[in-house]
Image 1 (cartoon, rainbow, N blue to C red):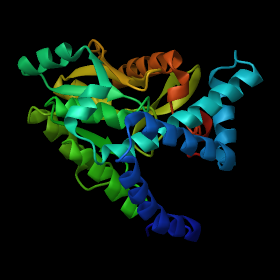
Image 2: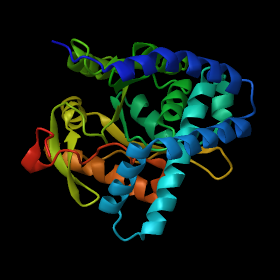
Image 3: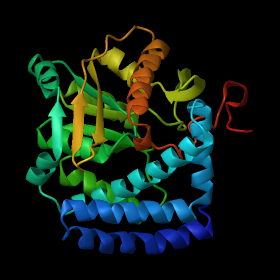
Length: 303
């Protein structure tokens, strides 16, 4: 039997999608700097009304970055909410943006590495996390012809899920929904066909995973990316996007991993790269996500 969605969430979903579509139309008319100002307002609002997410963010910062003072954690948490609000505004604006405009907003480093792997006929996998504006990362990669498909969870709210799929497909990004029948087969087929696969492995999700260190604590991490990469001998590029002080973005495609043959060790290597990037710009990661909700002694998610 499928899980029943609570009434509060169903009501929220009913009204939220039309509201977001209206906001998308509005921000689509605004200059980029004004889009980001709107996003900061969204972030301020989320900080004030999202008590549960605010407390969770502060708890996770205390766990991962204990060297920070209480005041520093509050400042970082507030900056994180502003960042996520800007992410939302930018993604809504992307629904009406041109590919040319996307390219103008993103500085790209290391793209020649990806092109060299493709020219050599090697399958390509992009590994990243929920850092910066990851939807912009996918858009830029496919604007440049990578043909990347991404793996994502299907949102419970159908209209919101359709809005997100529309955003990705606008720039040629096809989504393989993790819960769909034959998803694992589709992932392998993407690489067999010479296309690229984009995977975010920085969340505790209900898929096959392994325990690897993340900010000094065990974190249950999807192992599928490592298994697929090793099976298909893919070139796996750690790739991250970050928002710059001038409102633009920088996207770096780092050198491909030299993956160890063990999937757990390979997953740990990928996770270290994600942690390294988060430490560079900690305000641009999803600290409200329950990354350490399961621990080895409570792998079922119980406390």
